[in-house]
Image 1 (cartoon, one colour):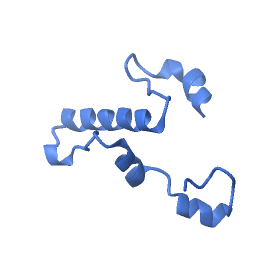
Image 2: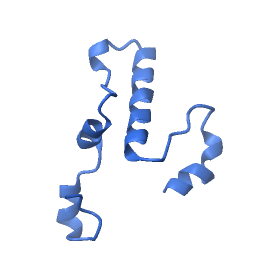
Image 3: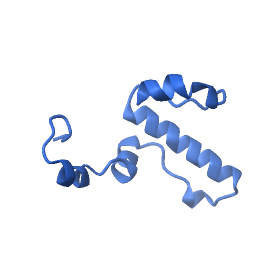
Image 4: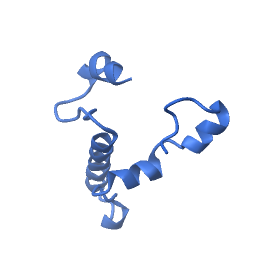
Length: 82
C-alpha cells in the first residue's frame, strides 16, 4: 500500500500534501494536522479540532479495530499487538 500511494498516485498530491509514511504516528499526526487545517478554513469552533499531541490516542480512536478483524480472520501471525 505504501508503494502504491507513493508511486502510483504521487502526482495527484500537491506540494506539502504528501503524507509521511515512516510510522503510524507520523501518518496520524499529519492526518490530524490536515483535518484541523480544513476545519479551521471552514470556520469550525476550536472545540471541534482534534488534539494532535497524542497520535497513539488518535490511532486507538480512529484506527483499525483489531477485535473485529480477529473475529473474522481468527489468528494470523502479526495481526495481534499484545
